[in-house]
Length: 404
Image (cartoon, rainbow, N blue to C red; front, side, top):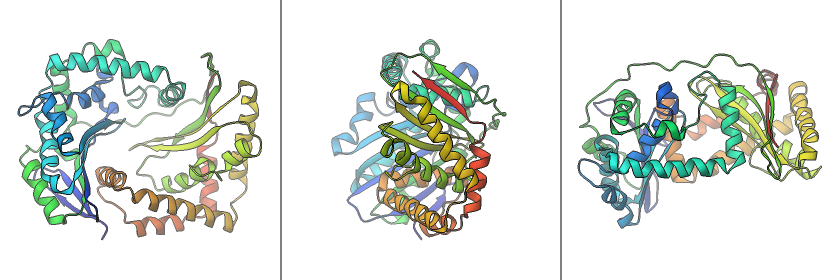
């Protein structure tokens, strides 16, 4: 068994993977992100995450920030559209200290308005930094357009005008509604036994009151494909071609993930990198990505190039997509793609922190986690015909967004 799972009396689920290392990691994953905000709350999930570090009923802000750092470790957090995660890295001997600190900030944060006022300025600067990055703006704008009218269709950071209105009371209301124990997973990895992992988790997390979410997310409605070009006066053209995709619970997500990796994965031999960069020298950076959510998803092919080469890049991408839709992969090409995908997964699992975060999210969404062998079996079972079906279903009537 690669990992051990357990459930605390208040509904918080736990998962532990024992590894031989002096360094350990743990995280509390909360199934609440920007899509759980009300229309008047855009940016509040991310603001809440920042507020976790501003003091608790037991600690001032500097004590929160120094607790693990003084021991050589670190505490951090991040927010996505569907989850908020507080995570820590530390020496294995400091596991109890890390869990106690995560529990303190997750359940006892006071969100003092004086500290929030300072942090609000930090997020303003984060928003300005984001505006200076055409690539990040392009991805966010494309996703907003793909999911327009749904709770997935707005920026995680929010807008300055809305952030200016949030105070500690707003954060507390949001946290009570969304940060419920039935939607939490505590994940850990380190050179200590599952029994120790569960014992420490129970000591600091089981005492929290059991809470249950009182609402359901609404799946986004169908969207209308679009082609939009925006003048941004950048040195290059930045472009995304993509579409809606399968949710994380749909079985077709695996053939799609394999297809996206073939198209524009991280390796230099991806189809688009070979045809656009290596053979024609048109782009320094071209890649494909798949972002699944609980009830929908998004695929995106991104590239940057000289403005005069934009149309040719789009033609080459369209040509490769048509081939995948009409010509099944040969047995040799499919076998190579599977081998590459599995090897990438194995290498990523060698990074203990990333694997730990992945375990937590998998348990949070699926309430179960596949072992590496089980994932390999599922990948090996994918057929060339499935790749063609997925290519036709997902990469038809694509949308395009261009920043020039």
